Length: 333
Image (cartoon, rainbow, N blue to C red):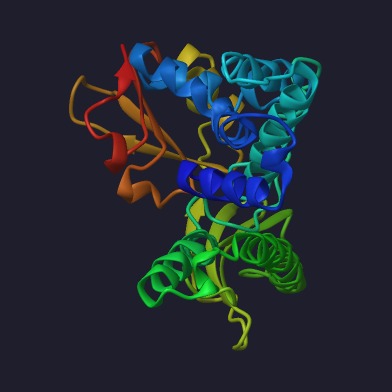
């Protein structure tokens, strides 16, 4: 999830009473809930190192006690500070971060360094506007109540923060549960149909921003990949989608796969769609593209690997780009 959501969640956890378990407990929770995203420092080395180490060891379960300890030690100058309660709060904050990241369509590699499998449930977008709005309301409502209470001189000056905190966290759990039910329906819908006479080999459904009934559907068959709009309030039409036929030149894709850029890309990308495009120069060259379609169509250039091979199938250039939000920061050779 985005760091605003992580921060709001940690603040609500603190307001349930957890923040009072240790001096500086709220600050420990806030720091710990964002500490796993310290992997962003690898972006200074380029997009490819960031791709390699994003949601890597900082999001692994075996590292959570260490990150929790770092968050706790950052507050050691606070009067009355005690290690064990602060460490427990720090570890809880890191766990909360990882749990939220498992809910979205990135997932996390929680079993590193033993296994590199991605674990994710595809329930939320990285930035879920409904979650952010409700959590923000629950954080700001007590402040508004305090302001109104101070104006009228009544007892409302005491902020009802704990009740709002439990409400916000309960909403988060129930929202995730509801999205899980809808996600399973979307996946089952995709599995039910044939696509141009082909049986789906793999299907997936990813959330969209506003309507929880609308999902982005992915289908892989033997000859092609397909992207579909799954609206659970309407009948699904398997003929209305965008189809990308799998390239026949396996030797070109294999040559592209051997590049370090492709290896890093494939360790992160879970739904790559490959394309081969002829180019004018150099003569006989071919551009091999791979796009993780969770983040956009190949034509949009988001989360895309582009490898140029010459007529002898040697690599001329290899480049990865996140697309619009990191425009101009491509890594390549």
